Image (cartoon, rainbow, N blue to C red; front, side, top):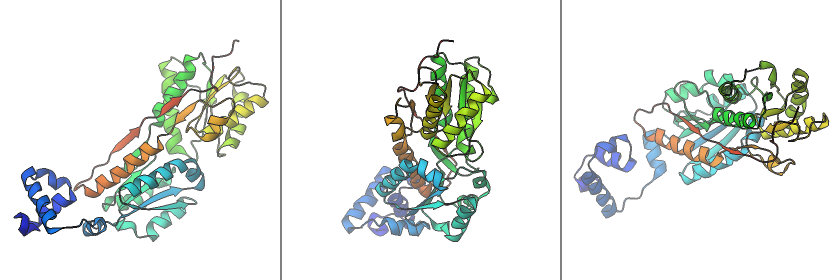
Length: 335
C-alpha cells in the first residue's frame, strides 16, 4: 500500500491509525493513502491494529464493592453501550474489597488491556497497582474524583451539585441545614459534596457548623433512617438536610415523619442521583440527575483518545448535573 500511494510505511500507519502523528501530514498525502486503500480493497481490522500497538480491544470496568456497583448500575450499563459503539469488548469485574481489587489487577496481567475504567471510592486506590499500569501506558480513567497523579478522571461535578442544592434551600429561607454524608467509607465522592455544601453556606454568610454534618456508614435507606435522629439530637431546630444519595434522603424523610416533621411543611430534603425510588416516593424527591450516559460516552471516548496518543497527559473532566426540583423542598417553616 505504501508503494501504491508513494509514501513511507510509517505515513500509511499514521493515516490509518489517525493518531497524533497524522496531524503533521498534509491533506493531499492523506487522500493519496485513502485512494490507495480503496484501490487495493484494504479491509480495516481494529483488533489487529490494537494488537500492533500493543493493545487488545478489551476494556475493563473495575467496580470495588457491591454497594458501589448497585449505586452506579446506570453508569455501568451506559458504559457497556458506549464501549460496544466504539468497538470495544467490555469486561465488568466487581471486587468485594480493596484487597480483592488489587489481587485482580495483578492476577489478570492487564498490561496490554485496551483500557481500564474504575469505580473505586477508597484511599487504597491511590497506592494501588493501577498506578503502575498507567505508568506503563495502559489507558486508565477514574470515574470518581480525586484521582492519583497520572490517572485521568471523568466524573459528575458533585461539588457544584451540592453547592446548588444547598443554595436552593437557602433561597427557600432555610438557615439550619444538615448534611447526611459518609466520609469514612466513601471519602472520594463525599468530600467533594461536603466542599460544595460549605461553599454555599459561606457564600450566603452562614457559618459552617460541623455538628450539622452527620456521617453514617449504612448504605441507603437505613443510613437516612439512622442519620436523621442523630441530626435532630444535635440541633432540634434543623429545618432541612441534603443527602449524598436518594435512598438516604428517603430514609431521612421517613425518620422525620416518624419524629412528627412533615415534609416539606416542616422539613425539606434534597437527594442525589435521581433514583426511581425518589421519583415515585411521596413527597417526590428533589434531587440531582446523574448524567450516566454523558459520563459513559466521555469516559469511553477518552480511553480511545489515550490509546492513540503518543504522549498522553492526565485530564480531569467534570460532567455537570441537573437540579430536579420536586415536592420534598419548600419554604422554611414559620417559627
